[in-house]
Length: 280
Image 1: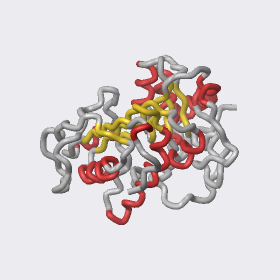
Image 2: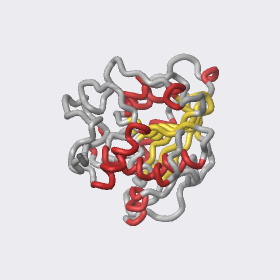
Image 3: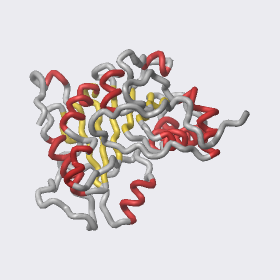
Image 4: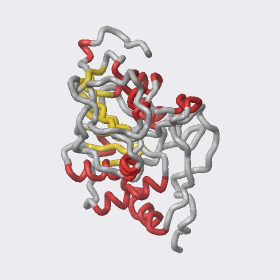
């Protein structure tokens, strides 16, 4: 019997309890016939099916992830948090078969679209998709110093002040995720909201584990339609990351007249960071 295009994927159990404030909003998981067919063909190959906890985007306490077993080798790991429709991760995996790639995404239609992109890219075997909340799952599943490159491109800016607590880039997120970066690892971010760029710079510049990759890099050229904080740093901005595909999210921001702010940091060797780094 053909699958019901409107049904939830088998790996998506019913919603249960929420974990405080999420940085994302779960939208409908209904799949188009094309995406459902892609899920049926490829989910077993690419989507990691781990035990779920109190919510369907949280890992169960007994969940585990062996990277060598998952990818069949040991290689540098690139992680993209919020991989969306998969443009970046599919292109990166196909372009660099020497590295492994982990896409973290909770939106089922986005995962299904990523599967379609991987199919069009020749079905690279160096990528997997983790359909769980990044902050809750990655520290529990990955060993310290296991990530060679971490990407966070165009996270929801939550522009209203009362929603700032939902922003993905926050002190707790950094405290949980930065220990996963290997010495010399790169952290790359991008946003089309100047106020969120300012928020990111305030938090990331304060971390002793991180150094700006381009300390003298100028602001992006041009004017922007959104308010720019007066104390937004003039220097320290990265040029557009060549490995970032221009997605629909970026296109919408540019169409609205907003500039794109690229941030890039490198993980300072642990020998240079004396003791635990306090949360700002």
